[in-house]
Length: 207
Ligand SMILES: C[S@@+](CC[C@H](N)C(=O)[O-])C[C@H]1O[C@@H](n2cnc3c(N)ncnc32)[C@H](O)[C@@H]1O
Image 1 (cartoon, helix red, strand yellow):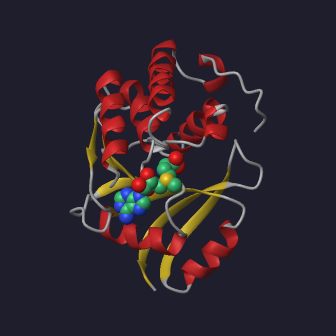
Image 2: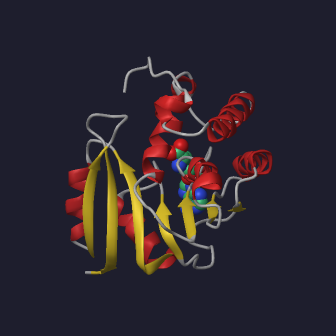
């Protein structure tokens, strides 16, 4: 994705209302990022393509769900962007963000309050959180696929779907994970990075 991406309701294919909520989120991110490291300074300059659009494309991989959980949310990518998108598109759905860092959790709660997203934050380690029974599970830049599949085992419902954005080494991660786990994986080409994919994963069980 080029740095020249101009964020508008049309370029993101969202309504004016959703765009305004996303802009409020970006404003809060810029303000808080001066004090806590939510995203790198370099990517902050390209926040709309590197973080917002990158998360919006994850949201668009599923149609119907009741409970979406995002693990290691950091500044809220992709989970909180998906929760903001969902306000208009799937208002009945609820979101849970798991983030062990207390200051990042405070930021996430501020964005939730200001945007009105149907979302809560669990400030614990993923391994210590009670099973979330989510029907969608997402995580970006958190761990290798083998580790992420162990999180699916704990937090994803049997018929659920996991969405993991992955960089250029996704094929190697897939091969490694297949030694320990059984699952179906569909790689979906990323709109924001030529080598990257979103791995859409179903049917996880121990191999
Ligand atoms: C590299 S950041 C990625 C943040 C965000 N997902 C993104 O893509 O911008 C990883 C985040 O996961 C959190 N984290 C790492 N291990 C965790 C664990 N075991 N339980 C809960 N949070 C964790 C860290 O505090 C950090 O905020």
